[in-house]
Length: 278
Image (tube, rainbow, N blue to C red):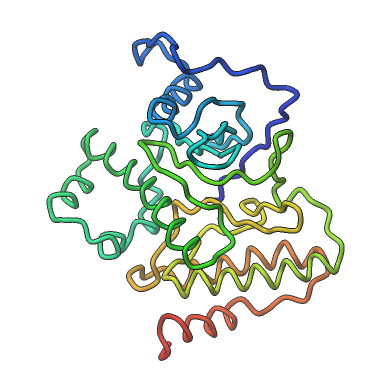
């Protein structure tokens, strides 16, 4: 399930056409990239960003663009994660992650009936609910002090968030970095601490690996939360927690780090934050 984003070399990317004033086209005449860029236009109109600089990461489900922030945001750059058109998502694979979300978000009955329909309208609403869930999770975890990007704004298929990196280079993904033993040991402890903090705030990442962790100037940042689950309402949450710890272990074992037993560690923090009787 892990979305392995490809990092995009800025030196190989042609300058992006400015969105402001672009001529609209019929949807069927647009390329996928043009559809994605058009999705950023409302953020320019509503003064969240002033310009799209370039794409910086690309995955099967979403593309992340580096954008210049509007002065009102009091920062120079932001990252805009924009999901690919909903027709490309295979929602049949998302059942394990969707379980229990209606209890956590408490939507009304009409909204739940709409999400359950297999009509095009139902699929569109499910697509937007998926994105809204990532934004809500970022808000909850960031407010709780977790090492995640600061959420800025969500509009349509776009989640606008803190940009990790500098003007020339985005923060690299952890899996691509050589790590000294002392650094690896420190990061492993930080990640286990983050996993527990997520659980304290009723979230299991559910797709955690070295592919969705960034490292910038010794700061570790965990990304990609659309599949996160609430352990209070999802029957598979414990198994997903064990999988998260196992995935982290698999990466750090290769760096010579002594790792925890994934089931034993998951039980310990689960009993502390979810169910003391498990």
